Amino acid sequence: MTKILAISNQKGGVGKTTTAVNLSAALGMKGKKVLLVDLDPQGNATSSSGLEKNKIKQTVYDLLINDLDVTEVICKGKLYDVMPANQNLAAAELEMINIKHREALLKNKLHQKNKYDYILLDCPPSLGLITLNGLTAAHSVLIPMQCEYFALEGLTDLVNTIKKVKQFMNTDIQIEGLLRTIYDGRNTLTKEVSAQLSAYFPNKVYKTIVPRNVRIAEAPSHGLSAIQFDKRSKGAKAYLELANEIILKEKNND
Image 1 (cartoon, helix red, strand yellow):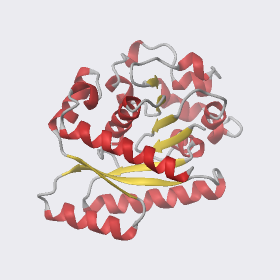
Image 2 (tube, rainbow, N blue to C red):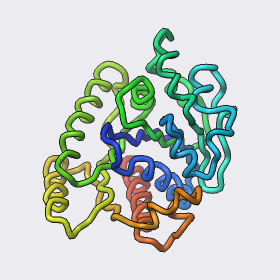
Image 3 (cartoon, one colour):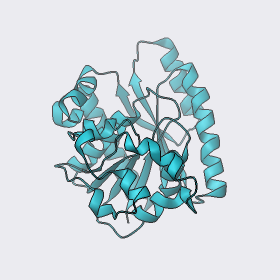
Image 4 (cartoon, rainbow, N blue to C red):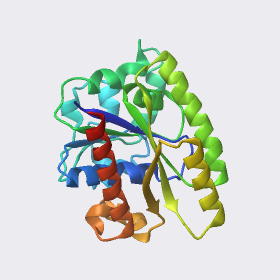
């Protein structure tokens, strides 16, 4: 069965797209068949995967608005496949307004028979129709977050959003896990917020911690994941550990 995982946080700058790209690569490195769906009009997951987003003719926009088949939109990759996005997707929010069951457009496409073990959805840092489509389609949500004070406020908002989606749109959705990103263990506040997360969500915080790492930041400019750019870097090793943690959890749940 395909696992559809939304990577979401309403707060920007928390390593959401970095996590989507590098977790896709890590799962692919572990032999899993992975599809990364870029749901952000900025198209950063697309360009970070080595694709020229402004030259791509068929994107997620065409899947949702022009009713293309999933196979018509997918770009094949070495470690994972990509369903790309660019600025065209920004217009989809307006064009979807008058479509019946608009929040389930993506779900209806992705829940058709496919060959993937994992489908990762890189959701935009806002709560609009695109994000709602991602949350409605997903089995669970992975929440990347920095260990800082305002991140806790953003987490509260996102948890409330997930509860509403579960109530009205997707009864199966749950929080998959909280991933601590851009982590600096020398910072006292960072350690305090990390401890609070573990206390409030005892079974949801991943053991894996993604450190603040230069190689992770450099990789997108080369159109590569950190794992492809420098597999020996601390950031790449962290995402490989996260992939192991997710795969093991799936096995234990079977």
